[in-house]
Image 1 (cartoon, rainbow, N blue to C red):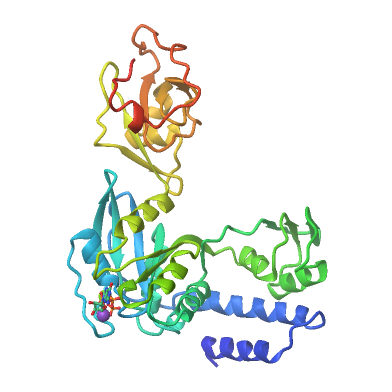
Image 2 (image 1 turned 30 degrees about the vertical axis):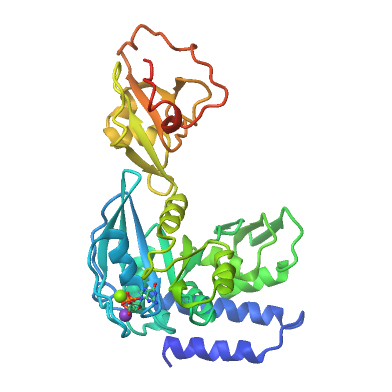
Length: 399
Ligand SMILES: Nc1nc2c(ncn2[C@@H]2O[C@H](COP(=O)(O)OP(=O)(O)OP(=O)(O)O)[C@@H](O)[C@H]2O)c(=O)[nH]1
Ligand SMILES: [K+]
Ligand SMILES: [Mg+2]
């Protein structure tokens, strides 16, 4: 029996089993069995070098966003509109057969947008190009799940299930469960909060299913069996996702209103170019990019050419900024002068660990290098710093 058949069989058994206190241990065990099989499914077949021909698209720009959705929801139309790169769009399904990259220029940054073939139910098990599409989405910083506003709302659940089946977790935080395998000592099970979903016996059973007999488990939140399995599997990818409802030109205003009010969703119409600004702003917000401008001593910064840092890629500290400029800079840094919302006063003297905010300005002061006259150190005490863009771009910064 193949892996997919085994999964189907266990799913059928779960569906037959009534959910109650008496069956919860058995159901938990079945869930763990499915999780193990799905992980097996993700491993490349023995003897092959990888997962077959993927969409090898080079990363470019300050972040990567993937367009995921059923066929003909308007992914290619959207890519063409936002990036100016043409991607064939047509009324028939599976118009797009490979991955087509484009670039969005936004706030002086470059964001790579990827158009992908449509995926269908069963994608996680290898239907269509599902596996390759999902692999590319895992490599991105943000997923735009494109949905046809005029179609069934169940589509969003089906797609979410497909992505979850391959270990993607959308708009979720990693469970607050500390888990560490040990060599000896048995299993120690503890929690810092009252647990309503999982008890010691259930936890033991799940661990047993994984043949883990020595481990430390500490629940820091009232997590579920699924959360526990995610932590044990350890290969989950937590990603942000925006639900993009396209084609609102063909539905009624009441439906538009309802969809627009859902969490993490943006309603648009590619045909009428409606609300695309809002989509871009939401993307920007979710990506959390941090633009930092370098100010040479005695000069103004170039406000059109930021260094772009990201919490997910290397962090947003002064150390990350130094590494961005030059690898050897970290050891040469004496301190950095910082203007912007991360500074308590202007300019603040900061060390490597200081976290920078979007649109901060920094001046690097190296060891043995003299700061210009040492002035300005305690001069401008600004208790409520405004964004540099609002305030300082007009007036020159001192030092
Ligand atoms: N009414 C309406 N139609 C749209 C809109 N956006 C795209 N379409 C149409 O929807 C159809 C599918 O568009 P595509 O961009 O090819 O969709 P896709 O998601 O890339 O499709 P595949 O590549 O086949 O997965 C085309 O006929 C588009 O003209 C919209 O905002 N409103
Ligand atoms: K299409
Ligand atoms: Mg397409």
